[in-house]
Length: 396
Ligand SMILES: Cc1cc2nc3c(=O)[nH]c(=O)nc-3n(C[C@H](O)[C@H](O)[C@H](O)COP(=O)(O)OP(=O)(O)OC[C@H]3O[C@@H](n4cnc5c(N)ncnc54)[C@H](O)[C@@H]3O)c2cc1C
Image 1: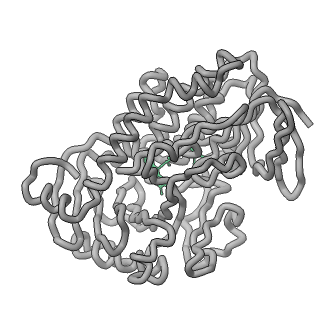
Image 2: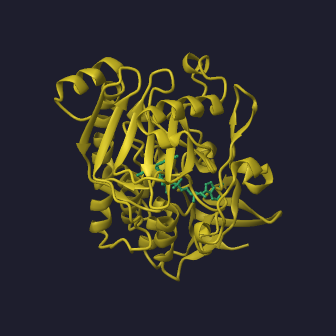
């Protein structure tokens, strides 16, 4: 058993950034169920054939249940990598620059995208407009950020946070690795463990943003697509679907609200939803009428109210998406994760007022999020979207 000043659960962009910046006089540990020491699996693993997948190949603890159909439907190589589109929005680029970080070439995908092709699959309206993303390999990005954490921070990779218990001023937590439990204590605990945060569940805040399921199908690439493509269809989702072209493959993704009865009556399974999307896509991009070779799944929050942002209680804090920091209009979360981690690390300079300082420092981000929350229903209203398409007065 070890005792730490700070235990950070999760080594995604928020956890790794926080661990990199935490004052060196504080004894800190960062814990992740993934092993971020190992080289990106992408380079050593042959292409997956989704038909041959067995449930044991995945981290069943983090698979997602579709309660309506009452079976496990989404598998995630979450022991290995996070399901993500891997697009770094301008805000994320700015925040990396603020940290004086230059993205290494092995993280950057050679297929860069400078525009969005937005398509309303119902009205058939479409529009192309410029957008500045950096297309990255998300897995390499996470491993790169992790590699920047200084040596004085303990790193426990391949450990799953199992339970948290708080007594007076001490936080006890248990970790599980290869069927064996370890018990540790800390003064402060940070949940940087994403949308399915166990730390958030332990804190049990009054409000939590709705969870959206995302499915990403990987297709072999036989032509070079230059746009990030966004699809809208009100029966499929109240959010959007996408094609993200990468150097070696194209990703077709869809994000939709879990258990939305209104839409689930049209699509009784995820397969049917994805088949429908693929058929629609093939009208615009015929080469997608093929078999996928891999499916990955994940979840993200989509905040509807600012009071769903929860930063913590007593000596337990939330950062990045675990706190609810993610754009409800695009699901862009990397910039929020890094920026809130910087602000939490600064708040650790005065150990008597971490939470109140963190709240003050993130107030402007809350305002930015509020603006996105207000904007979101307009972007995703069918009529307003079509008005924008037909008048060309703005961007979706
Ligand atoms: C399909 C999909 C596509 C997306 N595409 C984009 C995009 O293109 N651009 C963008 O900006 N954002 C995108 N997002 C959102 C973005 O991925 C997240 O908002 C961002 O990763 C949040 O960073 P984080 O560090 O807070 O959490 P995460 O990146 O989720 O990291 C959480 C970490 O905690 C670990 N963890 C979780 N639970 C435990 C546990 N119990 N024990 C130990 N470790 C644990 C996980 O292994 C993980 O490493 C996408 C999200 C999804 C689902």
